Length: 377
Image 1 (cartoon, one colour):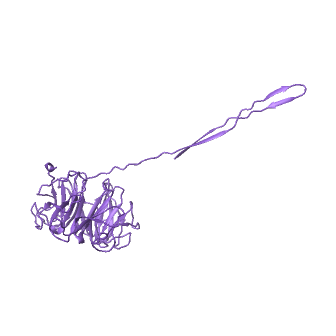
Image 2: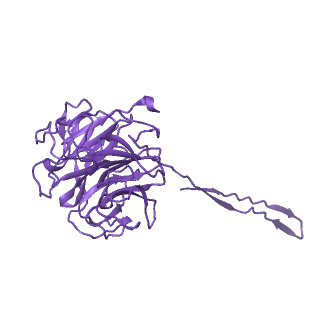
Image 3: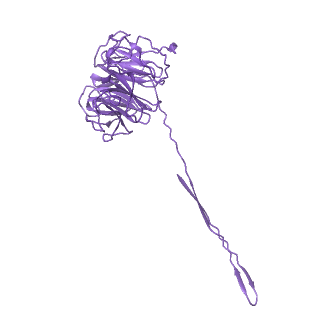
């Protein structure tokens, strides 16, 4: 707000004198002084441009049944060298098509360049489980970029903390935790993480059966708010049972999707809702196309289609919006293996900007890419 003051002052005196032998008359005229103050309001609008790898995928899309290994060993061989993984827990793809993997049992996050030849540890180093300094991890489960891909948020699960890695500087800060608890500024084992366009941080609190939302620029003293679950395990529509991965659909009023691992379902929570809605599974554990068995990864495309890493069924399923049953997308239901068409305990599912699908396989120690069939739309 800028205040502008304009002051105008004018005074004029006129004297007329007439002299006779008898009388003298003086006439004086004075103008008034007026001060005017004008206030002008200026509104400044700041627009944040987000980088997104969320693809536009038609509901009828299909993917080639054979995957290509883009991280780890195609044969499923575990290891701790830079070319191998040990328990590929989750996968993330940036706008430049670089692949990031939560290498669970190696206590590290790995970065595979687009050509899959350059492999580096991103953020804290590996091999020091239990340390609470910012250079080491105690298991790696999930990661998420902010909206501009300037910062990478990492879950240090057994230390019960969230780290923020600045991509440009390499600096690492603690934004939530450490310390495992059911307090509102803590969590106990995070298997799902999401950062929205406002830099709110959503944390899947596995042990406490809830999802917490923390404000931007959080620190260890900032409290979250409970946006899903009650803090007690259960199967009612207001409860969760060991929630795993999460996704926020920012094009659908920030609806929250939760892979409800222990209830074999995926739940959708609109903002401020006390109850969720079942959008996939929920018919007990099983391998029918209406069922899931311990779902872990979840992703929602721009059409509202829900993709699920169906862990114990060794497959990726998709549920169209408002559908009663799912469709097999990748893997062979109930048949784990290491061939290009098989999956073994898929734990994460993501998509790049082209619509290609990436699946992290915990028991195959690898990440597979399934190319979208563009003729299917």
